Amino acid sequence: MAESVTSLGIQMLSSRLILQGGSTMSTLSEQLATGRRSTDLTNYTATEARQILDFRSGISRRESYIEIIQTIRPRLVSYQQTLNEMSNLIAEADRILQNAQNYDQAQSVSTREQLFNILKQVEALLNTRVGDRYIYSGARYSQAPATDLTALGDPTGETYPVVSPNLPPWDKERVDSGGTTTTNPRLWDTLSSTIDDTLSINYEISTTDTGIQQMVQGLRWAYTATGSQANFSTYRTNALTLFESALDNVRTLEANAAQNVGTLDKTKILHQSQLTILKTDLDTVGGVDINEVSTKITFFQSQLEASYAVTGRIASLSIIDYLR
Image (cartoon, rainbow, N blue to C red):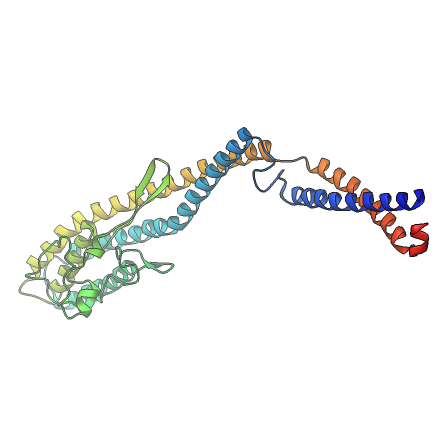
């Protein structure tokens, strides 16, 4: 009877060790995989749990800011590049018109062709897309803002510059509607983004910006002048006056875009630095020594193997042997 009790006791002890060891191995395996004492807060003191929650919140916030920065940076870089090209085209149009001081039919043909090409380049720049967004279309992200700038008529009599919520005469939505859609406040809506707890930047630029309106209107006057001998001098003067203001304003927009790119880059570096600190602090509070965990796993594996071996031997006994 003593022997049967001993066999039963050994079996029960081995079974208990297997259950406990399995649970411990599960915990240790999780620690080895995550480097954390626990994926929840049950194995921490109240102070440690509070610290862990604070660190996790800080990490999540910083990562969100970095994601915002990475999303809007390509748009800002595109603004910077396209505005630089626009300022160069304004300067080129101004040079062309400065050289055409009087109407000359032969010269006007050449001048008109050059201005035609500039208008098409400006049209393409205003319809620049980054991802799924037309970056110069305000909140109308999916709509191209500029129509065919070479197909517009004489700008005489047009209200200039347009003010909110009016659409410029060369706005594609307005032209495509046959001129019946002359307002859309969404073209005037521009976004700002928060990139740090106390830092937001207004970065979007719309075709309603004064400098851009001056550029397009100036090019239209210049283009129209090449086909009007009677009004050449007046239209040319209108164009040159607008070019002067447009060049200053577009260059200011370009400088602002460049400054915003710099702000994004500096802020991202700060967030990355803070993330490193927060993650180190989190590891200090809730982390585990991987080498120590590995040693424990080896130890418990040996225990489990021994327990399984004992249980296996007892299970192989016949009922008569087991009860003796």
